Image (cartoon, rainbow over all chains, first blue to last red):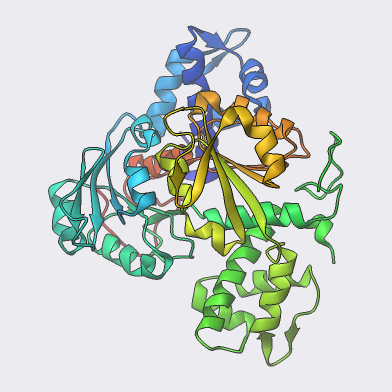
Length: 225
Length: 225
């Protein structure tokens, strides 16, 4: 396994392949070729073969991949065979929406705790998850064996919250605050910046007629206001 | 202006620069050099100069950038000087959290409507935004001059919803359903896939001790369970 050289773009694609394979398995399919998989889910078949080749020989010439076996391998490669316990900091609308987000369960992530500093919220439950006082963060993380933290606080508090998270020994962080955060390089920090995505849509809408996001004329003609 | 050759990674960085410059302006700063900007916000100064050079000469040697002027330019480049009207399809927890999301307002996006098929929800308001019947989607889009659609429905409905959106003439779409969607290339589709981000964190947690996300030994030593 050459896992030392695997980029995040590759693991992102492995995630997508796994989701597609799970869909096929749910539909009763047993095997699939990279070409079929690519065609069905709008992927790139050469890329699929290249990505999977990083981890071993999974395909059989003329048959393709055995879906169940490949699902098992991808699940293990992505560490999804093990439960990860998550906490969410910030019990506002976004934090509470995330506490209930189905995607966590699908990825074998269990939301074990919410944290907030608002005394009116502390002690309440959202979708079965208790909101704890952020003051007791470090001890709660230890008690609940939390490995992943999700930052869902306003931008101005995000860096201080990140420092608290890292101090508590958590190494994997997902940040929803629209601000660049700084973490030491042994901490995996994923920022989900909706503002940036919105502004990229705005840039697209602001551009002159006939250019798409790649700056080339669209192949399919369409109106643009 | 060479805007035809600007990649999405560049516009993403322009968004970040704008946010950082706004922070500095709010703190009363008037000018900033690319080096200072980079140091303060954990960015790359050569990248800042290169990105901005795509759009003209904004800096003065020995002085740096005039923050107000550069903010104005970036705002125009990103199309943020114009209001964009947004609708959200799916009035579940995520959709309603998004209806209230402060980042929309910051990017000059106004959430004009929510849509759902659940008759219990239709007619209700979330943060001042009315939930409309998805059946009346096309006419509501026209009436409310909606340019951007946000997909916040379960994965299995997402492709059908996208097709409805495109049919209604909308060209900019933000998708939160964890599934690859297919759109014609004159439609700008941004997928915010939380599951993929989670699985990339899971991959990080599953890896042997001492490797970080780039597959190299961390410079800052840390514990990992």
